[in-house]
Amino acid sequence: MSLSLADYMGCNPIILIGQDLAYTDGKIHAQNSTYEFDGNNENLGKDLIEIEDIYGNKVYTSKVWLSFLRWFELYIRENPEKEYIDATEGGAKIKGTNIMTLNEAIEKYCTEEINIAERLKNIDSSNSELVEKITYSLRKLQELKKGLIKVKKKSISGIKFSKKMLEYYRDNKNMI
Image 1 (cartoon, rainbow, N blue to C red):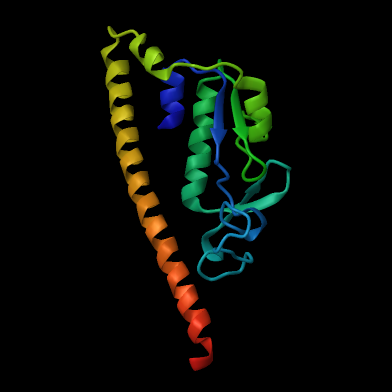
Image 2 (image 1 turned 180 degrees about the horizontal axis):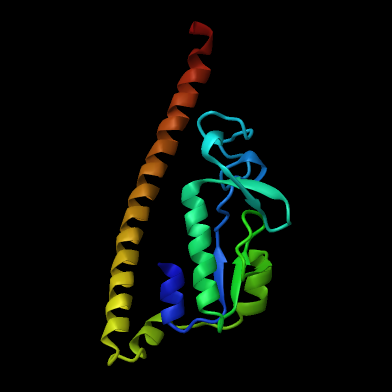
């Protein structure tokens, strides 16, 4: 949705962030992730598909992530007038993107402040289909923001609880 919104808003280049779409180094998205597999793991490994990563190596992806990967590639192929950047340091290769780190992308392209609200106001309002898509996308982004705020609050609560449990364990570990 964010890719489509960026396209509708006239953004160029469009920088993709966090689209690993692969189990790089046997981990899900992040270094030191809780979820790992060795390629043979019965829970994760049985339905994985081998694909190429940004370095030309083989990595695994799931069927769901592969569908996202193919959607990105199709979108890029059908909209070649824009530049697409995969700001990453690992993950599946998304054909049609230029690969660079997030820091490189920021240094190269994020050189001026842009007023997104003003850009939205200047969109051709006579194109009702475009206005409807943007309105829908903005509503979904607002819902996403509310959901993320809830996740943040629950995460903070979980961290506090975990700290209390750790303290309790440290104070009582000799009794166990």
